[in-house]
Length: 236
Image: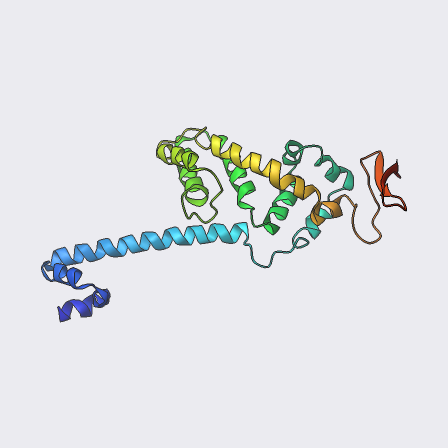
């Protein structure tokens, strides 16, 4: 056993039952068992490395500022173009600048996984190759769906289980239910807050020192001396 400990240092950390098992193995069996263990550990390390790389590319929640990373991109967006995004959530998603700005807003709310999952599903549905479809399905499931996934989205248990059943032999619609739930969440919850956020208001120049004001309403609310709400024609 001393020779084994010299050749395979990891055996120093074995439990008594494991040690007894390896004492019974011959040299060839012992080498095969060791190689299998090393291979399993290497696969786990590679999987964690791939997920870590994805998180690095996608950005993190740390040191997030509403004004960070948007200054250079927003300088090319006209107020008129940004105002179109307020027409509807669907209109926002038609524009790459709109998606980028909305993603930045979600990052400040620690929920950017929602738009990333939605975009991944859109890309997934455009794949024609069965091999690539399977690879992408496993990727989406590992990153966004399975329990404790690095960017797990908030979907119900039944939807998650249905995806788990089909991910081994995926179809183009296997993520459709989950995508619709995440879409609905963004539309009803995140999108209204985005329209009132500093990130969006700066683009439309509705907020900020010395900024020109753009109004889409014909009337505005003011308060008189008695504190009662009244309305007056808005300035254009």
